[in-house]
Image (cartoon, rainbow, N blue to C red; front, side):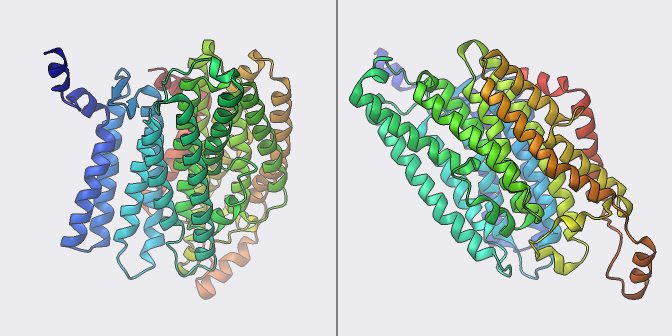
Length: 502
């Protein structure tokens, strides 16, 4: 009778359903969007519907911030950390949705599939941050990857679209194969696909099983490292960043990084992989190579999007330090450091890519030009002071200058590394940050550089092609909102910390 009663319990209770309500809203929105496309093809309608779906999901997600950790079947676990990460993802998607408006308006065709792929991308990221099982992790990983492949190659008129999409497709499929094979090896040893599976310590010391387990772990982390653009799995990053439309590059720099790092951190903490000394050495080598290689390669770049691609490689190396130096006594501080740094990184990248998109909107032809160089920032402060201020705040945050979110994030990482006596990692982070100043500061100098304003006015009067930057009211509100976020959260980081701690 006991077994019959237990088997009759519902698989999904109301508490579980409310915990994954934001993901359910996105999934339901995708279904309704397909019906909407079948009923009426209208770009304005599908864009408004996508915005409402993402906004309602964000409201539902914010309401879950104070909810206790909830296990939703064996596949998902929703806690404050995953909820905060999903909020970053939804905010990034809303910003990218708005910046896609002008990009898509240049085409006469309706872009239903673009908005559907965007919703699928957000759903995949939402599954990833809530994953508590290798099966749900792989499902979210594939949903995220396939959606990005379509979005990267969406601009058919681009010189780099097919090349970027094909390169991303092949390497993403390779990374998925590595990760799936690694999961199979791990399962063959542990016998459980859950993150919280109890792994006997003896396994680590058995010659046969230990080597097999470490091989599986190596393959699994290699697949994750591809998405995070961690060296030496970074070769696709600059080409795809350059070839993809700017709103999609924005998504790759924010949503993909947040989702993949959160699920990696959950997996490693839950299964105590850090007990393996070889694994710590493995991650340390990745972190050091990424911090140095990313910053050094960025010095040579004149294309702004390629420069940000190499910058992202370095920042993912900084974040790996959080995983390397974590311990059972400092898990709360580990999550706080990681999520605050991800929040700072997301706000900075959104700020910079908003300005890049606005610069490309100066004329219709530039909307499809992926090549935006550092010279395009020349005199930005004199043409659009608000845009220049937002760009400067984003660059200073990435550089880790005091009174910015990026500085607080690096301070947390250094504090945790100091407690763990990881002096080599601290030295590498400081050296990498110093190299980063060599390409962040010249960008700021270009923004303040003199421009021939008299000639600019004359040219504008003659042919109307050269003009001061300007956007509509929504874009202006977006710019001033992120200026406020950058200033407030940099000076008062406790606002973010309280959200994470809740």
